[in-house]
Length: 592
Image (cartoon, rainbow, N blue to C red; front, top):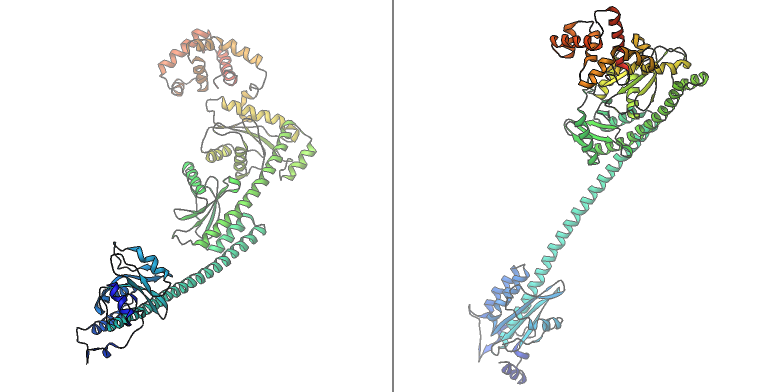
């Protein structure tokens, strides 16, 4: 077949190489004749088919569909067969979507090398074919690769050329339409992006103004010297929410704004500590019930909590930023106050240590006056020891804070196992003990108070008196509470810091046999005798205090008479035994 197309060309037949057109239309098919009569198309003629295809091509806006229609109708215009179709996609020729899995890519490279020109293509298993470029107003749109099973007529050449031109035009229109759509979508996207950027710029500008307002307001508050109240007042002004500050233990320090509660119960220590750790791990404000909480934590040490009361969860990003910035300002303020307090506490301790050891009165008066403490007034020395508390800086601050709250102006220091206060005026009987029990949450504390001191040079002796009162209380039946040296009575001269030699001999003389018996038999005869005297010789009260039956108490007293050889009915023996038991209770190795 390829040979016949070539011979027709050599004889001057208007057909091109391979019998296929080069894409130029010839005379209109209505001018073609068969013999001497003009050929007029019938409804089934190819021109009508081409007209229908032209409408379908012009109606389609899908490039793949246009190429498919063209390839499907190639055979309708002549003895042609569409072998392949190509579309130009992003500057590259790719097989059309109608290419099946058996598509032979052998001539793909040949088609691409034509670079927009018509040209011959070898189609395996077919006669020579031709690649027809689909040129339109927008340039090359693709290719049709066509073979012919017989020699086409000039009319068929013309119809194929028309189909090529119609396909190229339809592809140009579809490409232009697609590009307009893409341009419209891109324009819409760019407009949306511009609107988003504009909105973001507006938000950033508003955010910057808000942050600048927060910075300026809190900076003015910090520079005003108003301290904690100035910072919390500025935060309330910025956010409109009530502001509160709590100390490390959850106790309310300050409240700014409406709704301050009349009373604030002490929080559960374990739950409060868990809450602090949870907020600290978060690293920023956290909502806890009706509050937005931020931990005040300079250099990793928690000093307290700054919170906004927000029961309706109305806080926004601006509010959170203001809270964080205020917490930072407050951390600096509280850290500074903490440092000043530590320096003052250290200087106070040095003064108290000098007073306890004995120092120049003139220097003592001047130094105490610098701290606002009047040594010219009557002074008392108070010694505090708490079993559950380590005698460190924190406990010393706790004792000083409790004394201050009770109206006891004091100078405070700490020793190895107790805290010492030099306070103006006589302390109330149990007020300091009760306050510290509430502050620490335990009642296992002992306080010793000296006699009055009129001049600073008497403070060292008064310190020994306070220690004696503390020791007597610790060794007594009710070891926790407050004991005044003035109330010691006999213990004032029998205290543990006197010379023990004579006292031990006296105790040994009167109680030695009983002490030895208790040691050998793990009994409690000395304790029973001491409790009997403490209860005034009352059998029922003594038995109840020892948690024993009255008959058991009678048996023990009888054993005491037998072992000691002393008669409790004898007035002199009774007095000596009672004094011996009192001394025994405060001696080393006593009941403790």
